[in-house]
Amino acid sequence: GAVVSQHPSRVICKSGTSVKIECRSLDFQATTMFWYRQFPKQSLMLMATSNEGSKATYEQGVEKDKFLINHASLTLSTLTVTSAHPEDSSFYICSAREGSYEQYFGPGTRLTVT
Amino acid sequence: AQSVTQLGSHVSVSEGALVLLRCNYSSSVPPYLFWYVQYPNQGLQLLLKYTSAATLVKGINGFEAEFKKSETSFHLTKPSAHMSDAAEYFCAVTFGGQNFVFGPGTRLSVLP
Image 1 (cartoon, each protein chain N blue to C red):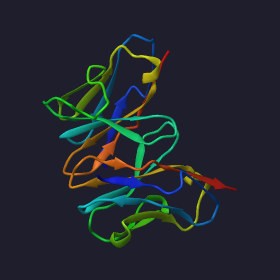
Image 2: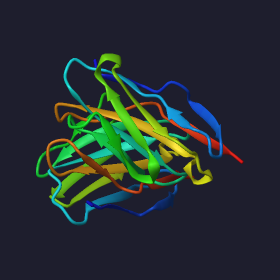
Image 3: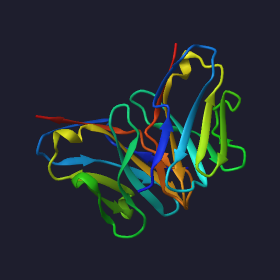
Image 4: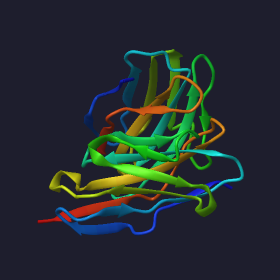
């Protein structure tokens, strides 16, 4: 089946710094990639949708200047958390869509901001 | 607006007992429906999906789900629970190729 990877799997950064998370589709070309955020014991919250070569579409309430998304190729999307604060600590999951509906999920990245 | 509800944020069953996790959706168009399992600090693993073919869908690890249009439901079942089934389960819906809408999740505990 289709495989999506994320790197790093966990990262600790200091408050005020930026951190980049990569999402790759390993064996297919993803026309669309999605970024989700998951708080402890909660469901996934869609942050943004990105299409290769175009600007990401952010969900209401998500700061586009804080969560920078780049989808430079059909196999790679990156999420950069800028000027991170402790409240940005969370589990970030990406997914990739090849065709019309099914999404394949990455293993997630645990971000801890100290 | 489309939505997904999962009745019961936490379900406990004994090992060997029937597992029933409930999922209901609201939609004005035919949905595609999914069940995912998530183990601690891991991503989502697809258990099964309904995409307008057979209404009874069989998935991995002995799970199955039945799409009932009249009840707008897609409940997940497994005849006999195993300790390794303890995890968080999410029902998700997509409508006409749009973004996924996830339910709030149900934590399944399996008691020895």
